[in-house]
Amino acid sequence: MITVTGGTGFVGRHLVTRLLARGEQVRVLARRQAEIPGADTRLGDVRDQASVVAAARGSEAVVHLVGIIRERGGSSFQQAHVEGTRTVVRACKEAGVARLVHMSALGARPGATSRYHRTKWEAEELVRRSELAATIFRPSVIFGEGNTFLPELRRLLKWPFVPIVGSGMGLLQPVWIEDVVSCFVEALGDPATIGRTYELGGPQTYGFEQLVDMVAEAAGPETPKLHLPVALARMAAALGRLLPNFPLTADQLKMLLEDNVCDIGEMCEVFGIRPAFLRDHLTD
Image (cartoon, rainbow, N blue to C red; front, top):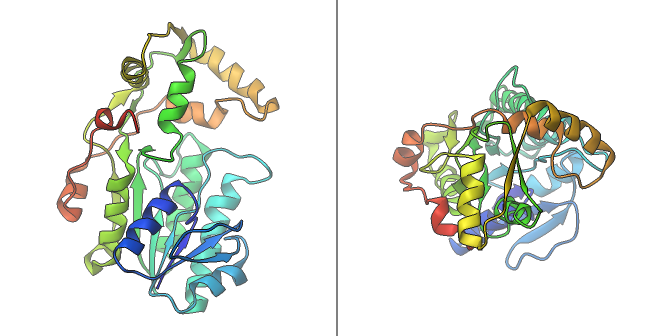
């Protein structure tokens, strides 16, 4: 039995589907009732240790996927990333589960400019200090069926103009969801990955403006672009806090302005991955 926290999310659904297809028994911890054919779904919350213990008990491993990209509805990075991970670590120990596979994020580091990356690092440190048999993954931005990455870029193309912050050259290294899932699945069966941290990315890096151009080319008519000064974008993001669905937060802007790339040599060698190109999945 493998327990997956966040199993009803984007990465979770793909991972659970793959594990079930391999004949694994899978238990999913979810905050809301959800039907995943073949999986044992348990209601619970990573902020509630008792529910995590109940879901983890009897499992060979726990895969911890819970995370948020923006704070809303009373959920903060500190709560979701740090306190949630703290609870999962404690629950694993209480339930007698030694194996933990933890999803962090590319760019997690001490002193990061964004709170997202800083709290992801704090969560990693909790895992490293836990004495569990843990593997940590740091994926770049993930694309694939069911994700919002490409749909949000397409949505920008419907605006009168596409806003490009600054030079638009902060580099991203998008990685396909099926490649991410393959790494998680392989790690679960490979003791050599215990105690290791792996960065996951695609085979090509793109500046934000390059991504917009590539998606626009696949989507149809070209949309005019407007480069915005960084200072103006900061002001807009600050004011956007007053609007529930404003497309950019101050924290996301900080991440957008820095490169988010990695060396994928180890990923390819350890997990036997030949990562997919984003351009081959633009219509997914």
